[in-house]
Length: 605
Image (tube, rainbow, N blue to C red; front, side, top):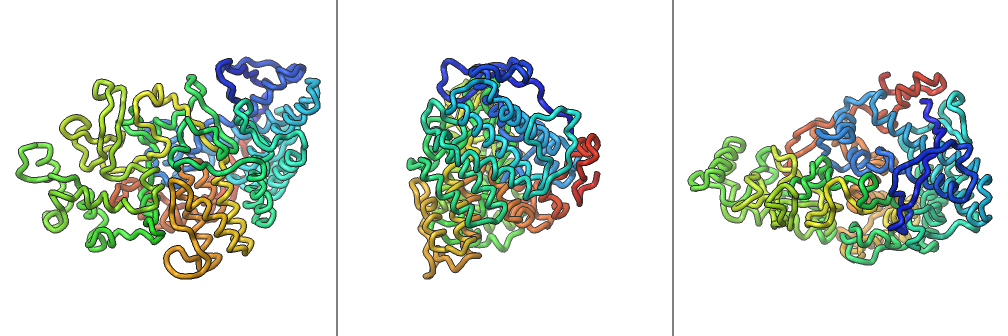
């Protein structure tokens, strides 16, 4: 293992203007041996474990792990984006930083937690506080090991402070790593001084007994111990957490981030260095000058059901769709008014270029100079409401702001193709990538002036665990345990809530919402998790756990998978290199420095 043991623990001084558990000042460092000799230093040391959650490969889950899921990742700016593309196009090797950084940064959190667990007794804390901080440290250690194990399928286990020269263990088995997680979380759950929840804003963001039940339930899901998973996941509600009851899309706003829905968040504020940059990666140039690196994939958009629960089929909405090649389907997405005789040279040029790409016969047969926009826009209406609340679909509009455009003033813009200009008379909404038409995320994307200072200073908290995730896992656990009725009842609390209002499923009967059995219910749960949890760093882990990564993201391994335009043309191919992709390789640097770290089968070192 790389010699990454941290002998210095960061002291974190809390901002006087915030009641949240969020460090907003620079680090100082002192030797670990002196770290735990007072209550204030113990507080700061435990806060240092939480800070490890903000390492790039953890806090940037929406760029990395969702990027390996339902995202058209572009990969032209920052290293996180390029990591996604190198993975997706199959060119990644065990020496890549995606693997080594993830390994290193998770172990940094583990070593900080081990230091706290071994030394908190030195601080002479009141008994109740000592027990609470010990539980927080154990919860966080379990969280780091849980994520490592899900990715690497067996890692070295360290449970006490270890000098760098003694970090020579080989990988423990998957079951042994998960058992460590279970043991730590069981200690948290059984401790009378560990609070049920941290909904009190003075301690918001800390681990809690409800979070421990949720995480232990997740571990049992990976172990396929569904009775124990269901038992744990059902107890989260008893700890005081529950579903967001407001309009669905409003949960993802700063104003509502401290709701009972939020079980364990990553916290951010606008202070430089303590904010996130999600806006930069999902926003467009019309949205705070974003880079549009992470875009909703076409497969993600197309999977959204109709509002009555039936499957969406393009040819039902656009007769003739099935008669055209993928490239020719662009004709349905063209903006109104294109004409070879237009007095507007931009319009005339756009028309002539479309004819060159698609052919005059296709344009004559399928293009409508008036009504083309309304026709394609209608294909995205009467769908699962989360589609248009999560994604800017073609010809949707928004009031937009960018500091470098329109004199710093807001303007209503429309997402059109071909893009002409983001000023009068066109007022097109611009992404950063404009060589073809890509979807953009609306979820977590702010478009109005004053919501953020800039694209790098995003303040909305991002959930690591939230109640909807837990509820859908509970429905899955019931289903896998052959309790179909309980699964459907639990599932329907998500499906029918405010802002979603999809039809409830029924056990038996007929129609699109009638569940025919266990396998059918499993597919419905998978759909719901994909529709619900985008950009939350969950989907990729789900696909690994279900063993559906090849099927859902690589089109079964064919050459039709990739970053696609609205109509499905592949702009960059994704390549499936084999089932070993579902287990991350032990990083090359670790195998070179520690002979007890075994190379992962299937990967070329």
